[in-house]
Image (cartoon, rainbow, N blue to C red; front, side):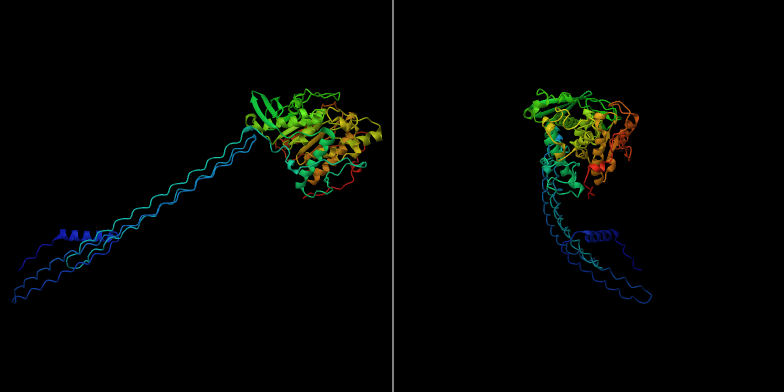
Length: 538
């Protein structure tokens, strides 16, 4: 009996491992397949009964030729450099200089180069029964492309000069370039139509009101108070509770100060002192003598601080023009220091009584940053119209403040000789200049000098503008009587609180205040003072 040869395991394992690695290699040209070994010759059959010898196993096939090396992958292209960011624009100059916007960063880093293709390894010899061919070598891996350089980040824009410069919201219609109208050739006994432009066209949209408002401003400046000066350079500081506002023109500098008190995020600017009616707001009083001194004798003073910065205006403006300018400069300070003061500069109220009631009205009408104007017992030159005051005196013989007997340090002296019926404007339009912001007027019928019949007629004519703008509840009036001058009763205090709560504190959504004056002398039929119809502005 012939014995069997032992099975050689290790060479087979080595062969299989080589075949497996060949299949995973990269992509070179394939090696030539190994040639299989021939089959062994079968043994001859022995004599009967004896077992023939087994045929010998065929020799192992020789290893196949190694696969040729795969071509190296190509080098990826370098990414393009990102573009540099643009430089941010410099901040514009304003009382609180706006920071320039930050430049845009460079584009993302360059595109990463594409990696070279991985070479494919050679194929191993076929797994023939004969000896296996050797494994082909894998091609080398191509180099990866280099990463492109990232673009640089653009430089940030420079910050505008903080705390100095020109405010932008004092008069948003300044670019209307409005001019005044000439005096009328013939008397007009009716209150002028607030909706008709100087060129005779009637406004039809709410947007047109701003330029019409500036025409009224130009008329009042020409015939009553002189030109309110454009905003100069202003620098505000806060030391303790004292706010200082340094105002500089080409002629020099003056400083307006205010003793800040109270709490709240709204701002109450009382004329020459804190305002008890603007309660719950931080008090920033306007001390008017720091601009021009108050006088009851129609006498102005060339030594007043205002004329240090505007010497060329001596004898050309009334004090209400200078005071309105001073109120605006105080507001500049509030805007600049809003964070230090802890206030909202969009919630500013102004209030004054008597001559200071006029001051508050001019201040609120001529500065659109004032959210609420409280004109208390302002009399002639305030809420009352010059025409309707003249009408009242003619009809009743009662002396009230009129265009020919008011104070000519407050107004220009040249106004005294004007015929009120030839003015291209009147004070119902001064009140209307406040629109679309809020205003409330307080009266005192027993104090005849105030001319509350005229005040009521003027208020109602102004209300037509508020109605046309769709904001009739932004105007209120309370002519409750039986109290001393500038000593508002509880009813008027409550009326003002209604407006303060809505327009300065935002705690109410209603502000309907309409209390008429009561007097046996009064004719409250205001429709007889107008001869125009109110449009619905789109």
